[in-house]
Length: 82
Image (tube, rainbow, N blue to C red; front, side):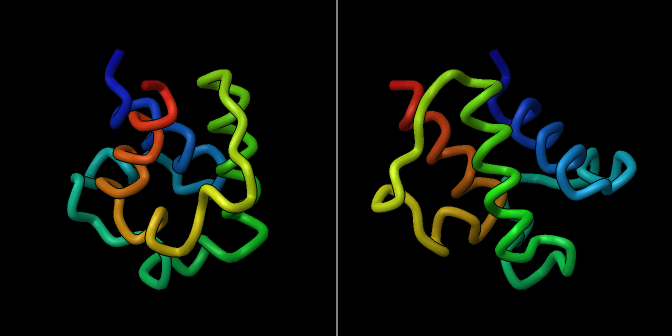
């Protein structure tokens, strides 16, 4: 499974980026860099990650640093997957 590719697909879908995530790498900043990634979009991304990967994200497991970059979000997902 290519976690990065799947996370980027979810970001693309939730944020309606029209395929622009294909240009993203692990160092691409997210929170504060993507205008579409507001607090409601973060909730949407978390919900889609939970549905897609089959895990639950508790409120105390996530903070702003999780959405700092593509790499930090992928690392979070990989950590949840064990």
